[in-house]
Image (tube, rainbow, N blue to C red; front, side, top):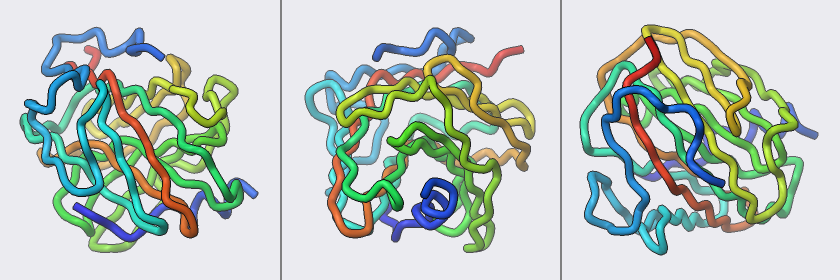
Length: 206
């Protein structure tokens, strides 16, 4: 699925490794992306290569890379994301994890900013709202090419997200047994390349 950018405006208003130690519940699936033979839907903007999912996005574009191994209302997901180089720090690109996704107009995204922050948005019938505001955190590495381990835990209607095993934020939502996967955006005036690696999906903590 390909999108026009839906998150950059929120970021611009707010901002003028190794596998995670978490995700230790009962394993559902994990992928080191050493092979393209996995439950993923590749497209022209996402490619599995060199032990990672590489997202090459045109300027001003965003895309979703769906996981086709099942739909889940609850889960604990961890993934390493490598920062691209950022041209405009006032309107940076974003990437992260999407879930409760019915279609282009109905989804929840927990997103990282390669300037040391995270936030969450929720789209309902095409209307995009902030689910959790942009929060900076010292645990997030900001250098181009640096890799951070992000975690999203969903249990019931409670969503908690982490960076490098440090809690960053939380919010509530309405669980939906729908698609999940990776999301990435480019800057408005520059193409960006994101890398996702070491994905692990487990049952949520009890």
